[in-house]
Length: 100
Image 1 (spheres, one colour):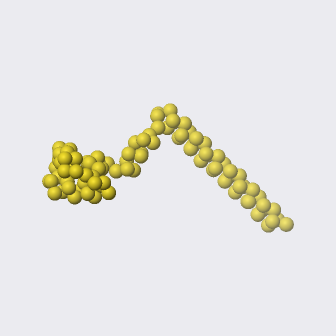
Image 2 (tube, rainbow, N blue to C red):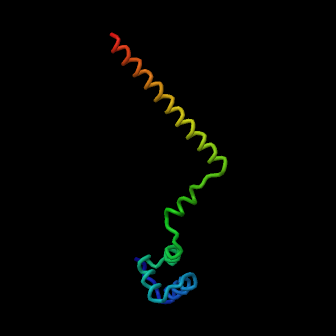
């Protein structure tokens, strides 16, 4: 936990008060909960959490997304093809066993 002087606290209170509609007591409590990080308080107020920020950072360009979808489609079709071949082989093996 960070030790903060009155001047810095009042500055952080002012910043949070301008960006939110919290009263002074709520702001003080939120700052304590967020280890006096005024940005965390504001982000919490706006509903921005870490997972949302990570998704924004992981966004792909259009071309990256196109190739990602193509690779995914090829992987799925290849898997389906292998499963179909495996099923046909098992059916053939079962037919051989029944006929013998």
